[in-house]
Length: 327
Ligand SMILES: Nc1nc2c(ncn2[C@@H]2O[C@H](COP(=O)(O)OP(=O)(O)O)[C@@H](O)[C@H]2O)c(=O)[nH]1
Ligand SMILES: [Mg+2]
Image (tube, rainbow, N blue to C red; front, top):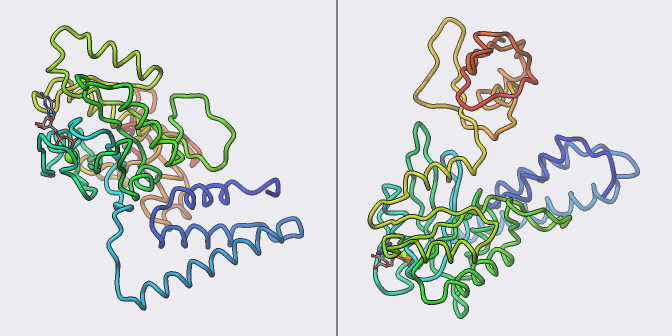
């Protein structure tokens, strides 16, 4: 890999790695090709990118000829502030959690493998929505082949375990095996230098806490899962769900920004949701690319010290800032 690739290129490359649909992949690759500095040192990379672009173009053309869109269970369109995919053994309560936290109605039943296809639902949290995707169970013997891809492309993975299960150790091992197959590395652990893995939040829901009268099961489970962040909850009785919702939003590392035009009130209903670390310029890009190009400065209302204070485009935003963009 040639050194000194510009940050924009690396950003496009990140998008390529995280892309789950054909269109997203192609768009990111084309951007990488456009942003790649063209000189001798990048000849091979250029050729490689060209080859990958034309291969994807060809595949897209063939798919269109075959007729329209085929249903792809390994890809759920991302919506809202971020996408969590729920995974775990049969009967842990994945579907019950999606039912309790969203407006979706997956089937909940006391027998295994009720859920066959991924089912997304939107979880309202304060003034945003977080997407939860219910999936079929994964066991030692059985896994739908598309589940690793869902796990790889989601923004976060919620491992759902039944705290009262007979063999929690095995359920946990199977879940970890799935993360490995999906090439997902949990953000809570020191990250190895492996270009094929993708780092994302992995959270564990210790469900059915209502069956754990004296807390023994939960403490044993916490020992099993070690350093992973976890929340005890009961999808059926509601205990711990508020806390879980909070964690699901917090672990996404997002900021909510209310944009306003000079002289007008901010739109408090629909914040722009950006990755934490986003700058005034990132917000302007999210509003419109013309705004980003013409941006002169911004004023911010947020934490007390920014009471309408003027800042430049590189200023890093905080959750719930109100930002007035001046073009
Ligand atoms: N006691 C108790 N039972 C639960 C809880 N959540 C789910 N269940 C039950 O566990 C069974 C499996 O739930 P389901 O959501 O279908 O599990 P899934 O296979 O992981 O999707 C059903 O009989 C649910 O009623 C809970 O928090 N407490
Ligand atoms: Mg289910």
